[in-house]
Amino acid sequence: MPVLYLVLIVLALGVVGFFLARGRSLASAGGDARNLHSLPFYYGSNAFILATVPALLLMILWLILQPILINGAVSNTLPDDAIRDGSTRSLVMSDVRRVADGLDVAVERGAMTEAEARDIRSEFTNVRDRLAEVGVALGSNVDRPTLNAAQRYRALSSRYDTVMTVLVLALALGGAALSYAQSQKDFRARNTVEATVRILLILASTIAILTTIGIVLSLLFETMNFFRDYPWQDFFLSGSWAPNFRGNSDLGVLPLLWGTLYISLIALLVAVPVGLFAAVYLSEYAGPRLRSVAKPAIEILAGIPTIVYGLFALVTVGPLIRDAILTVQDATGWWPNFGPSSSSVMTAGLVMGIMLIPFVSSLSDDIINAVPQAMRDGSLGLGATHSETIRQVIIPAALPGIVGAVLLAASRAIGETMIVVLGAGAAAAQFGAEPGEFLNPFEAMTTVTVKIVSQLTGDTDFNSPETLVAFALGLTLFVMTLGLNVFALYIVRRYREQYE
Image 1 (cartoon, rainbow, N blue to C red):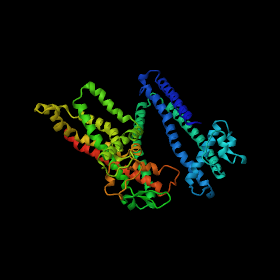
Image 2: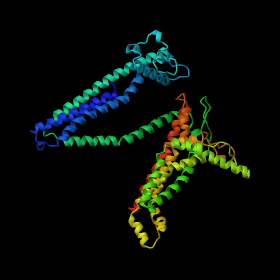
Image 3: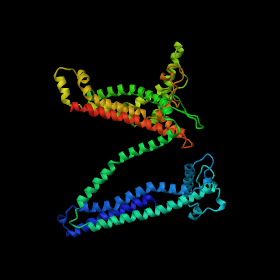
Image 4: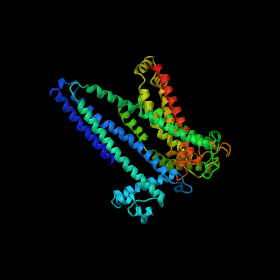
């Protein structure tokens, strides 16, 4: 049974249980709701919760664990000769899942019967061509071990789906029956419902924490695998980045960190002054009508996809900077180390700074508006002008929050990818090149995020250091942004108390 249908059936059972339990509770009170311990709504809500929540939680847990269990069971049955040259067991299992999905599609379209999918005869040994006849495309030919594994995969999936359907429906019916039996006038339905809702709220509040822990652990385990094959000293201290999937790679993180920090610095030099001045103007000088138009217009920048910013950098900003510098070269005959490419640190930094303006502006505007009006009135009452009040009272009072906003914008800049790909190129900084070349903002450089994408893109061996380095880069970036966020929260909480 499709998962959507199963969810709808469970919800329908919950609705039916709601009305049955509500009616039974009223009947036990002689039709007078005043004789009930709780309102009739709570008796119905208790039935809906017992019929739906346990069943849906079981289904979610089952859907998470089922692919893991099936993958392990099928993988263990693969013979050693099924692992082809240059391949791994995980890659073969990817082929198995693709073939199984292709057989499912063929059966759904009616071009192949379920019996044929379960037992493809010898005349269909070329499964790729057979599935292509029914509109299912596979990337390569399928051998007999892969086909057998795919058929086992489908059989286990069907069996597990049937068991899940039976258990979920049984749990839903059992919950509805239990709630119906409990629906008596003396049952404390309100207490039960409120306690259950409190547990659900606690469970929902822990999702973010559990997600963070999962991300950290996944990065940490794969990073440990990387450092088993590659020395950590070379990773953290080497000034060369030259991956080679055939071996003898230089995987130093320093060039990538330098490009990340350099581009982020230029972006902040653009975003912080513009965003802060815009926030001061909107909060202290602009009238209500202008503010109602200008602030949403600035915040529109935050809603533009980063790929659009990247195209803007590639098509407009980069060529403008290149043409301007070439003009200077033609006029003066001087400009060091600038090539014909429009990709540069300056291009990515300027466009990224434009993207960060609403982050700094909106947060700073809210923080400045949160400064008590009494501080403004006191300063003006002592004879200070409006500008003096802003410089000497409002900005110092809001400074911790502004610093926090800047640090949060820096975290956003460090994690940006698309603008860097299209605006700054994909070449890592070269520390061993001409002196000072890595300081030239008009040179092409790249960042950690770009290399994470490039190292995980393509059909490569997942267990090689050149692929696992992406997780080490991700963990390094995670620690950097986490440190900035923690420092921002510390600044805000440490100094905000002075003005409360």
